[in-house]
Length: 390
Image (tube, rainbow, N blue to C red; front, side, top):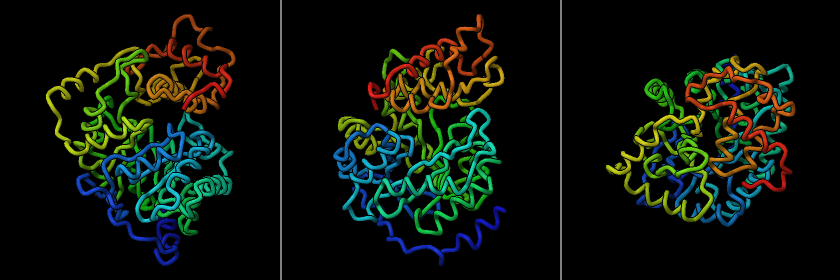
């Protein structure tokens, strides 16, 4: 039961002693916010490291004032975790926090639920492999990704596996990462008493933003720390450009003081310096407001999918369209074809299903030309992996 997991199994006396975070030693001119009940005060920008290719850039981000780093087992098939760990190795352990998302086997992205193939023991081993790649002794956050449905967030097997990792001192905090059904996931996470942090898709393109903000506020009251991802909504208006105003987009997200930090997938020193500079003045200029209003317009060639899953039952072939659309964004928005490729790994498009449909039955909430997008990104599966970029 939920109470059983959040009670004796997680009492502080069973856990290893950790160093206290001294506000992560953030530069005094950079604003920080509390991350829920964790005791961490984090700078308002965190590093989503999927595009980081060398340890030097990780260290440069740290020295510039970035103190919270998020990787995932599926970034570069685990190699990214090694890069992050090497980049942070040797630094005072109380001066940074690092988290990773560990997806379970036996999970159906189309429904957001587990199949009978899910094995809690196998999940623990997968998480332990992640910890080993970092080489940091422990991670600060283990995130359960693709969290959405209440039954999934509160799954006894998941909760027990995560609780065991925490009890054994392999992670300090537990969390979820949610791309879809985020309101449902946040409510369940707050109810569980187990999760400390939620990383959620949060940006100016979300249709139900007022409702989501209300749920976020309640989760924060329950002690959940909120980290925002996908804040740039693909970074480009469509596959051919132009770039969106990143300062305007990030400032918009940070106007909500319940957002402790936004995850930025920085890939260059120029982006890093730009983000740090932006933090010193969160007030939006008139030009930034104009740019934001323009970016909010829907387009059939846009990049950000709402992940509402309404398309799946409309599709003749029951394709996992939300995952395919997210891959489209990774490829054309974030220019990360490697992540797009791995994101689609479990989707069978060998029969070229869209070519068999004269008219696409899917009516997209965001007005996407779904058939055209699928046929476009499906070509990626035919490219040898060594030619892909992160």
